[in-house]
Amino acid sequence: MPLNLFGGIRPCNRNGVVRDFLAGVNVASINIPQVLGYARIAGTPVVTGLYTVLLPLIAFAFFGSSRHLVVAADSATAAIFSGSLSRMAAPASEQYMMLVGMVTLLTGGFLLAARIFKLGFLADFLSRTVLAGFLTGVGFQVGIAMLSDMSGIAVRSSNSLARVWEILQGLPHVSPPTLALSTFVAGSILLGNRFARRLPLSMVAVVGTIAASAAFHFAGRGIAVIGPVPGGLPSIRLPNVTWNEIRNLLPVSVSCFVMIITQSAATARGFAVRYHESIDEDADILGLSAANVAAALSGAFVVNGSPTQTAMAERAGARSQVAQLVLAAVVVLVLLFLTGPLQYLPRCVLAAIVFTIAVGMLDLARLRDIRRESPGEFHLAIATAAAVVAIGVEQGILLAIALSLFRHVRHSYRPHSSVLVPDASGQWTAVEATPGIVTEAGLIVYRFGADLFYANQNSFCDEVHALVQHAPAPIRWFVVDAGAITDIDYSAAQSVRDLLDDLRGHGVSMIFGRVSRYLRSDLDRHGITKAVGEAGIFTTLHAAIDSTRGGGHS
Image 1: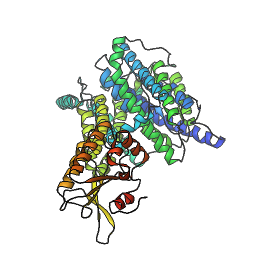
Image 2: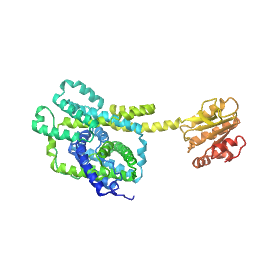
Image 3: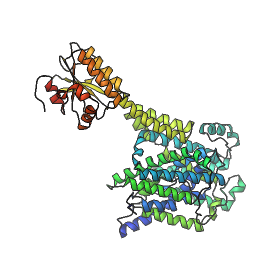
Image 4: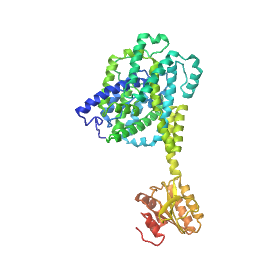
């Protein structure tokens, strides 16, 4: 497979590099506090958040093609594996980190397989509707998970609903200074995000509270701090897990893989369209694979093409992966010289920052749009969100995929059908195919709005029978407008042949109009052309209708 290295950087010029350099510094001021929060979601040591924006960023810049996509820690993927792995090992423990590393490595392997076998189309199987519901559910789940640290109430359960119940029961034991500080930080960031989006309020909150914590000894005043953070660059090593553990980790890795494919592709496409740029989705998948392998080897966790971080980078002025390389360089400086002060960072401040991230994931505006335009899809989105909160993130994404496919199959199973009739002015118009409707005396022109396959064959045949049997006068010709039918499978073909025999026994001839070459191939292969006769297959609807009146063919 040919490689297009540094596709997200080339072409570049001096002005562009200067702009992206400044944007990269700005992105670092916003992003570093957030990746510390993502480490909290992932249940890993806080320094691993910094690792996610080091080698993974460099790997994607090397192999990827998108100029805008920011590949780093992401709350959705962090929540996916933390929910499952926390039942297998204690969060932040050595065993837990080995499991995290293997999940990340397996995810990189699945992404590499997707690149080799060109499986990027899998991104299309998660609709925007259920993705909005999924991310909203993750937002609630992550927000609920942060309430414990924000209030100082100890919580043991990993289930969101159980967490809420434990917090309600523990309200008498809330820590007033912890709650006050976290509320102030979260409120300031949320207000800033609304009225001063360019200000690095998260960084201000981190730096300010670290200074205050060190000066006033927060740890001795009932406000928990994160404690010592190891400095230096990450060491390179392979995760050490058993084969049995790998087998248990496969479903988690698949869930992360699907989320990465979906979110990254949607984000990269969206920004490429906005800036009239082309992207190579295969190259991006390879870049994502390399980024996750780099994360696994350097002690980080799963990284994703983050829509929120990509949007932040764009607002900061980033227009190529140069900005992300600058971010990685800033992280190197932090790891080498600035991890010492991080030990004074209050846990409630980190939780408050994550809480604001969770609030940003609640895409209520989009859900309102979905409800207004398509109530049925809105119910699917809400069901997905509820499943994430009540059952778990991993199960939620699987449900999201299932609901997306179910909705597609449901439309194909019960497609729109109509009968062509002349209106008052003599123009053809389509009306709902209800028994008793005819095109004209002795003729029905019927349109079926989907491919014919085993699941909808009975609907097709039953509707044809009902239209013929309830016609006000005997039907002589039944014309099928096959413009929406591109494929007929074996089961449906058998049913159509039986239908032809039955109609013929009642003196009705079936004719197919607007038959594409793909459909014609299926009709020939399944023997339908022979059953209908060559004179009953037409490439245009007008020719099919004319044939019922003795007219010419076109």
